[in-house]
Image (cartoon, rainbow, N blue to C red; front, top):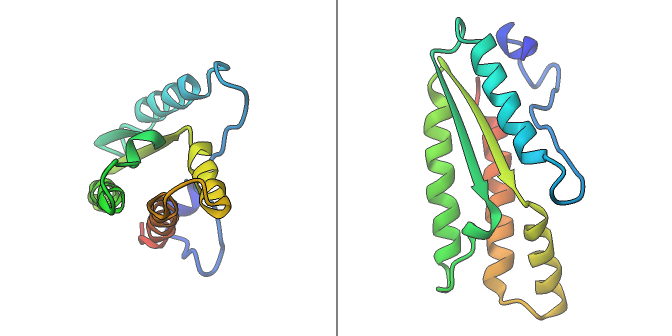
Length: 136
């Protein structure tokens, strides 16, 4: 956050704004993320007028209709990009149960999952990469 506040260009000094929490179910990873987002919103309210917490459940990205899943991902990330573009907002994004996306990719490779599953995974990864490129 200090690099972002100082307007350091990411092509000069590379930094990562992602925190990955890993552990068994029920250990409080989601609760911890929500608490950290709330604490950041309180501590940084003088800098950011709006704090938005966006929670994505990976299971909601899959649709029973062919090619609808990619549209769901695109729609969701368009909303996220709109929130990120506003300079006076702090956006905390939680992608819950992201491991279900990797399982979908493994299943597609083994032939037990329809190809739309891998499209969702690829769309999510592409959108995350595009979020990194947003100049903040």
